[in-house]
Image (cartoon, rainbow, N blue to C red):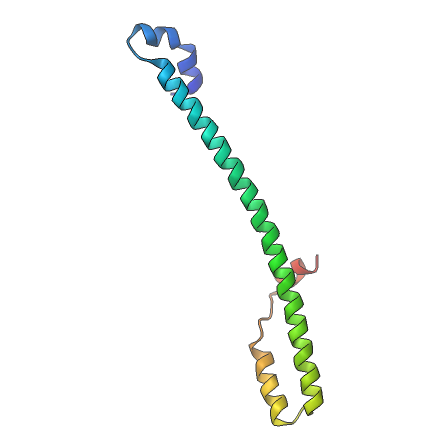
Length: 107
C-alpha cells in the first residue's frame, strides 16, 4: 500500500476503525529517512571516488620517486655490482600499476 492511497482513503479507513494518521505519519517518516540516507550514501560515494583518485595519484608519484631513487643508486654503484643487483630485485617488487590506473592517475 502506498502513502498516497492511505491519504486518499483516510476518512474511509477512520470509519472502519483504522488509525490512518498513525500509518501515514510513519510512512512519511520512512520516506524522509530513506531519502536522507540515500543523500548521505551519494555524498559518501562521491567522496570515495575523489579519495580513490587522490590515492592513485599519490601512488603513481611515489612509484616514480622510488623508481628514480633506485635508478640513481644503481647508476652510482654500476649496473653489474652486487648492490645494483639487490636494487634491481627491489625494483622488480615495486607495485606497477595497470595501464588503466596509470591513465586515471595522469588525468
